[in-house]
Amino acid sequence: MIVYRFLILGLAILVPTTVCRATQKILDAPECDGSGLIDPDSPSRCSGDGLVPNPDHSGHSGHREGFRFENPSTNCRYVSQMHIWDAFKDLEKDMTKLFRLINKDVDFTVMGHHPIAGRYHDLMHFYVNALRRVSVLFYDHADKFEIHPQAIHGGCNSQWSVQEIQFKGIMNSGSPFEVVNVWVTRWDHNKQMVEIRTYIDQGRITEALHQNEIWWNASSARDNLRYMPGPAGMPNLEELEDLLGYPDGRKYED
Image (cartoon, rainbow, N blue to C red; front, side, top):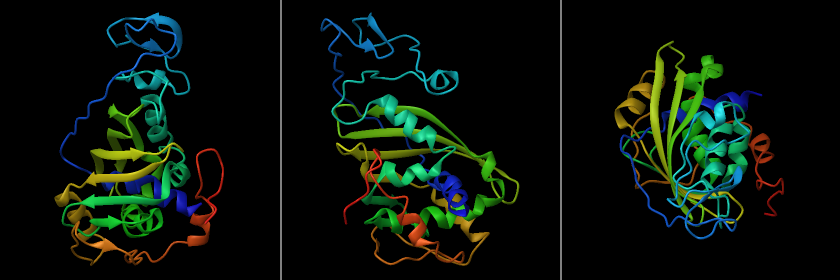
């Protein structure tokens, strides 16, 4: 499906240049004695220092690529750090999950002064005006796209989390494209992102779009209330609306 290809590499252009830090109170799992965290994959291990050395995380090849979690607890009010890792990594091969990972009424701000900057009041406007618009720049090499979570801060019993995500791909020109994207996200009890702020490498996005289309600047002060997809035109909105829903498969009532 052509929508999938448009989705896959659009995320790669959302490229902040700073690293954010978030703090959170680390909580013990019920199986521990109160002295430290428990490895969610090995209930008998409580180190007492809040860290689990080299935890074995099933579900992804390479044990989640050797990622070390600040808080490996699964006893969470919102989303565990492992859930966050899996959610971003899953987008590498199945970007349709984006439409259930992010709430349809998300408050999404793309910071900076460049063509896709601004505040988006729902997922569909963000997809059409920003994500899909830049996705066409990578369409010819969509199969080369990779996502590698680099760091996760917060989450679990905090609504807010910060993710540093490496995106790697090949542009239509054949040139390699590799960036680290930082998302500051607020989650709800449905395990969906309901508020997102991301920061853009202004020079890279402006250069990439300038080589492919004649559209110019915007700013984060602009409210994106109209669809402005760029020269590629509008996607099939009915097809996209069919993808919207909660993580457990339920559809929105409105």
